[in-house]
Length: 218
View 1 (cartoon, one colour):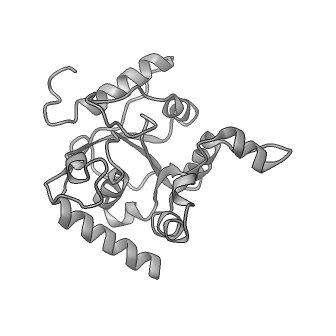
View 2: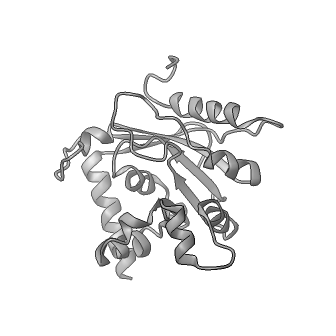
């Protein structure tokens, strides 16, 4: 009950602070296993995306997040695990293997697959880290390609988060109230025989096309 209460407060606070508009531009929200992949410019990105989902979808949607950040204190552990239900990934594979000991270990891809098999949806940032520079998007990591290749039944929905970097500037702990938008695009169609380079380029373009001036090429 405490986790649900805190989660509801976070949703209200995020919506009031940002005045966020959630726009489903490609398809309506559906209660099916989905990977929401988004641009990443702020620590608050997954919170705003999560808060923009309808309540029934939010309950089954888990952000993919760094274990070393969310396990750093008891409060972060509670918020990350109990409130957001985050899928925590160890960013140091060598350390992860050492901690697992002998025998088969579960890597990030396997963890995401298990969550999807369980009926959950995921929030994923294919850039892999926050983009604090002037580029619209950093190069995508290959994880989303492998996930899509191994699970063609899972919906891949691009999401563009606009203006949140200005709400939470780098190095600032005090948010600045500004209007933000979260645009959900059409699920990414599968292309038979598509290689990694082509897939990642198409996924990247699907994100860029959702930004306010997305009709222009990068």
